[in-house]
Image 1 (tube, helix red, strand yellow):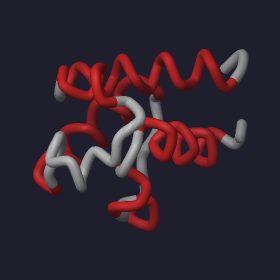
Image 2: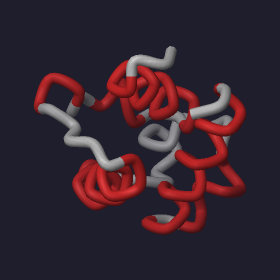
Image 3: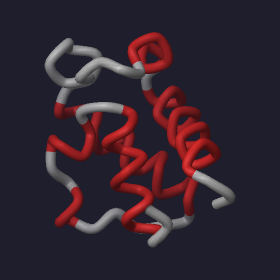
Amino acid sequence: MDNKADLRKKVLNALCTVNEEIQDNQDKDLLVYGIISSFDIVPMMMELEDTFGIEIEAQYVVPNNFRTVDSVVEMIGRILGSV
């Protein structure tokens, strides 16, 4: 991944594939504002895994990693070793 901005764009595209509302609510807590529910986390994980060719291990599957677009970016960055 070239840089954090590119990573964020790729993460955002993957998340919006699952839920288009994320596009207009990027800076909000997606769980608190009801944009996503716990049921959305599995499809989001699957899309992220497909997009980045990774496996998101159980240790990363916690609500705080899916609260905001930036928290997802940070998680993917840690998995990829680029953040």
